[in-house]
Length: 145
Image (cartoon, rainbow, N blue to C red):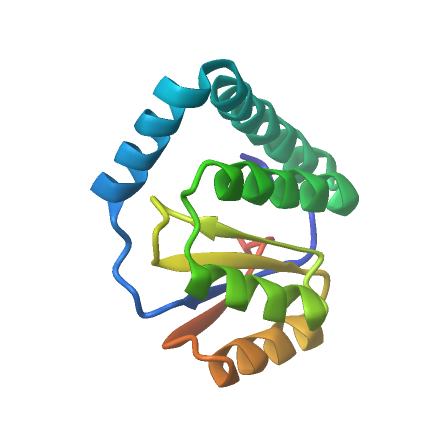
């Protein structure tokens, strides 16, 4: 994807091994019970993924933040998140992240937080570590090619 968006992603590890099988089983069970509601969330994740791509290509930070936060809302509602992720997501949002969501299969693992500038990204990294993240990384969205 040709990224035209300055900004940074802060990645934070909860230290809890993600549990793909548990996450998949949770969604499968919810799909059997709540059918259309869960399918609508799955469909929304597809729409938000396309919105994310467009936002990166168009350099639209607001649209990117909306898509990432919306995806986390969908993932949370499907039981894919984890209390440790939710705690770190709240810390990220309280400390300047425009958006934050889990990454990977969920039920533990890592999150990404969107920061508009390096100083906020570095602050987020420190705050997330202080809140219990076992490791953090700061990566620019734009790469020097």
